Length: 353
Image (cartoon, rainbow, N blue to C red; front, side):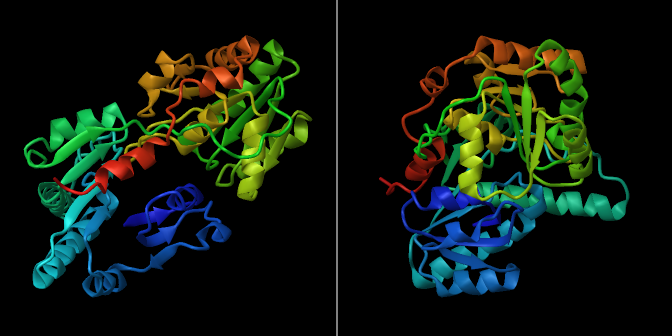
């Protein structure tokens, strides 16, 4: 079960063991062509409930207990799935893949009776889901630490494993290779993805590295600001809504990926799919310590900055990454031989002893 589905989920699903995918909505980068051959079921709570009741489930992977926006829905569907399995006298294995690295209840205290009541319901729903899980795979050490702090008692009976959310090297066709000085931003054009910080640092970077070029791939509220920079700077281009083949091509051409994630009161970068995809194509990464992969990136030769790093510091980090000219082969050599999410799925769905 997914709350939302994106193209990367569909690409990975083709490599997983056959399974039905239940989801509520799809993200901005959903490519319908990738859905071919998959058993997808989109629907709200009622439709998904009916689907679960009609299915002879053996295993169900649900949204993680600390995914607060969907936790009540998840709790309801867990109860439905358990009831259906009980009526059919079938064993049901409940699992989850956890990457949350921000306490969803600690950042913004609930104010007002309605907010406090909603927070209490969400907490109870999260505990209910956690107590009924048989297996939990953590995608980052930060997520493992957070769950240990918030839900240790509820997860005491579940099997747990840390499986880092790193991709293996991408198997897409090789192209002309990396372009010296090519910087890539990939993602939603929003404040929380660090777009203002990148735009502010770009003049500083050009002063240090006049030949640098920037490709911004994405869409969102800050699209006009990026388009304005692209109109003024010949070395900057904006690419909106490209097909996945074009995204892979741009990743292969980039030397450095920049994703300057910024925490908000209700959000923190859990992993950063653009980071994972960039690593899989041999790119050096410049990011902030908001991602759950910050420790791994720092340990493996990438640039990890404070989220409030000034433009000059951001420019210096990107220029340094460009000047080092780290080879794609050296970046790829640090990655696992198999995709971490696939390894997690294999562990989550393995037969019980």
